[in-house]
Image (tube, rainbow, N blue to C red; front, side):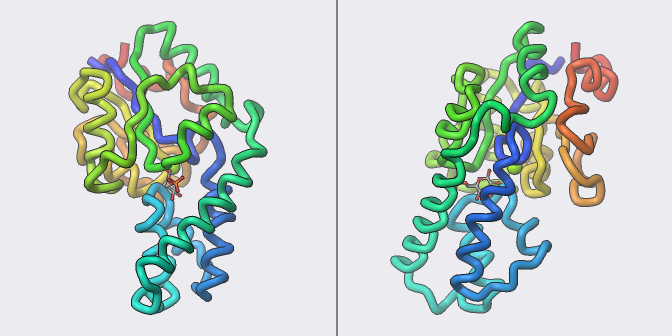
Length: 222
Ligand code: BG6
Ligand code: MG
């Protein structure tokens, strides 16, 4: 029986995936990486330093930057991202998410956050959702980021549940891979072809309701 729901943040709870994109684009321009849709998609769900590596590789300059220069680029990206995050308000919660969180609470489901973002507490605070998420995996404790299953295993463990007692929700292919490898059921939010590995894909968070999950996963979800 499903007892817990594990949430990704960026692109699931709020449209910050676009803000990460915007901040990375300025770094891509700085290092002259071609800012293609494929490069953008490959950054989703990936932790900060690995995302930077992907951009440097796309520019063919991964060897040209020292560790200190890479840290400086990552810090510049984060500074830009934090400027953008300051503008977030509860109106930036994606459609249906607030109602879904209420439904989960009312029906006694446990909730945890499995975001790669070190800025997750700040973003949740801006959105007015911090109270729903006392259980957040600290990305600093991870040895491997998404697509490795570790973050979803830890999120389930925070709830004292096994991964197969949980549903995970993700907008990125790397995140869906992480959920699947952990043993939890996976819900993808976005384009079916990008998220084909998910157990079920919803085009939008507006489709994310408890009755809908019950319909899709049957008896596993009360
Ligand atoms: C993920 C985003 O949630 O967090 C990525 O999808 C981002 O785009 C990653 O790079 C790390 O975020 P942060 O805030 O720690 O740089
Ligand atoms: Mg995401």
